[in-house]
Image (cartoon, rainbow, N blue to C red; front, side, top):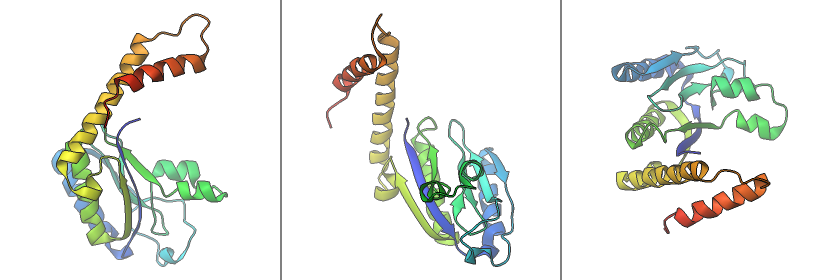
Length: 197
């Protein structure tokens, strides 16, 4: 649970991978964020293949209190990450294969400014290096460009997390109570505390 960005896409010109990595590396060094550079050159002609070579190309970085942001691709040019490759890289069923290309980053605890930065970085990189980028932003900033909406969504998620946390602290499991009844009782408390939109 927590406000997140979900994204997927494809790299454009494979010859520009190192240039993109250098640019992102320069940016994250300014912020002193941890980062990892993966392979820096796509195999020649690999974008024509649907299959991949089980290697990750690009860069990933981790802002404080944020999940890792993957600006990485497989040899077929599609966005992925090391962890997705580990979990879904050898999948044979269609649903699991698609999970290989579905990236997410939870920004909830990093704050709206970090979320804003990541959205702007993705937009910039998309315009310069990607042939395709699809983003679903739970903060609604990607779609609206409105900082106030983003701040309101962060506030809403923070309030919900606080309410759920309070519920867990306030509502111990009663003796003889089933887990289903406990969860139902807690959710009734949470729903009463949620503001009406």
